[in-house]
Image 1 (tube, one colour):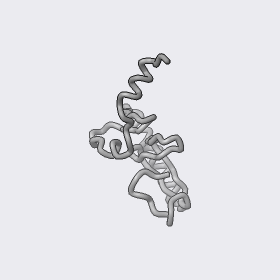
Image 2 (spheres, one colour; image 1 turned 30 degrees about the horizontal axis):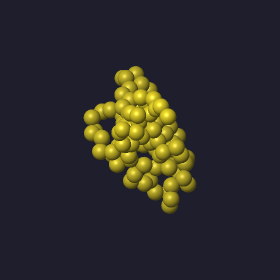
Image 3 (tube, one colour; image 1 turned 180 degrees about the horizontal axis):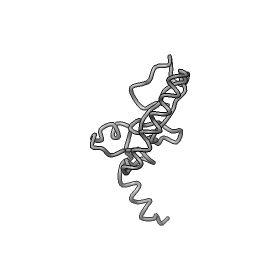
Image 4 (spheres, helix red, strand yellow; image 1 turned 120 degrees about the horizontal axis):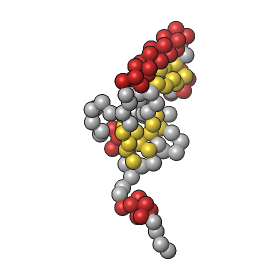
Length: 108
């Protein structure tokens, strides 16, 4: 059976893990774990400005109503397929965390 170059390359390198992601430097880039690879996705200035405004507005709304927790773009979330993604702004309802305590690691 012939294998493609992509298949050979995929089997040649080990998959990155959550531990690898946690070891990434704090260098201003946004790192995510996607399909076993660590990916970098920097944003531009306008993107960052919009994210801050949205975060501030959402945080005020959520806090006033005790709805849950708001997170910024460095927070990674574990998805059902195993990927760890970092949305620009995120909201998690209060009852989603055990004892309503924010975990140290990657939520969800």
